[in-house]
Figure 1 (cartoon, rainbow, N blue to C red):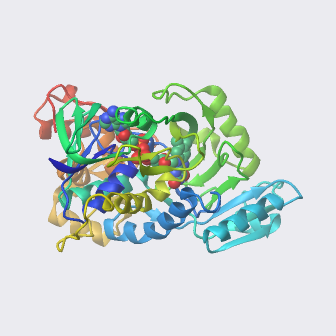
Figure 2: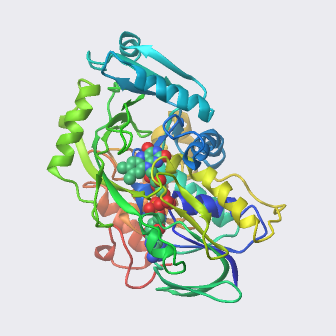
Figure 3: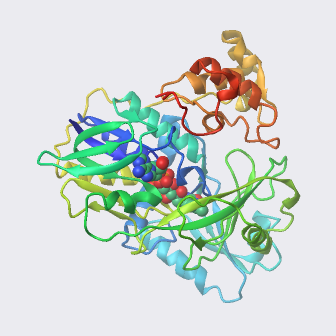
Length: 469
Ligand SMILES: Cc1cc2nc3c(=O)[nH]c(=O)nc-3n(C[C@H](O)[C@H](O)[C@H](O)COP(=O)(O)OP(=O)(O)OC[C@H]3O[C@@H](n4cnc5c(N)ncnc54)[C@H](O)[C@@H]3O)c2cc1C
């Protein structure tokens, strides 16, 4: 019997696992996919929001601000990419009351470093802003983060502190028993005293396996375009437009990897698997992005993708013990869910602690060694690394300068990559302009060797016939 089963290995499930691994508890994370970070967490804007958007008093507001405060320290201890690059919300109207509302809301939420600047002041900071910009809210604490590295870091830290992961295990049913729950998965049953439902767009399906109370999650599609790395960035801050009731609008932002991202659209759909991009969606991204920023290199788009927001009915995150004791929902975690994830982890641990006594572990390890990024090292550091391990002297991904040493580390570490996408998210190999055209064969050979399969059996994503973990 486990103490806690967490359903979902996205940012929220992995953050909860990391937080709960600080205590003397047995915890198991299950996910239907073969890797962590396969849901919404892999396809979003990757902004660590400052916290001025959410209504004061909501869980979104409280957990956004707390998450943003926690993230920098976590990024250092757990070694994931995080850059406090600031943000601007643009106003194209002479009437700047919309910006005032956001500023006051942010200040009520406890966000520091907010100011309203004129269009000219904004253009002095970001010369590529269009002439139509009349004023902007400048948010000094806004940041960008690598969502894959962050989630993998949470998962690896949880694993190192004793959490089990059962991947490629779809939850198909949950029975309530006298002692707790039996979680039925495609890879066997797990008994647990408590369950945390962090299943993203499927949180309603998981909830209804146990509870009779209504919970509806609507997928809201967001389409993006990602541009090639630039020597001189088009913008260095994240550029938003004033938000609407459908979300924060189309942004243009640098990524932590040095690309430029534009998007997302916001369209409610029924199909929870529909992550196709559309010409209408991408045209909208181009048209609206061009209102904010001129000289966006639209001709240098290297990929486009879609993420699905998990939108609940209340407008707020739904993080609570359900009507069934010891069954906890973390549902409706739309934006700013990535930013809030570490704070959601803390909040869930508090809720669980009301049911299961939490006793701190003396030997909890709060650091994690990340994968070296060869491209970020000085020549001296590169030389030293190659002397220690010649695999770091072989470049596999030329677009992003990723070495064989990094790929081997990504494959061989606990909870390591078993697919091309898994390697890409851990190392960046395949994220560049050729989109893995050049590096795939070598990466496939390295994965095949580790898994003991033929190169042609290596998958881009998904589950191997012979279970790999
Ligand atoms: C377009 C867009 C832009 C966004 N931009 C930002 C942003 O800039 N900043 C920000 O803070 N937030 C942003 N977000 C929100 C953020 O991405 C999400 O809040 C966050 O990723 C949600 O994480 P999660 O763990 O709840 O869900 P997910 O990452 O979706 O994880 C849920 C997991 O549950 C698993 N699962 C589902 N059903 C089952 C089952 N039956 N059995 C086993 N496993 C199951 C899935 O496989 C998945 O891995 C954005 C979201 C979108 C879509």
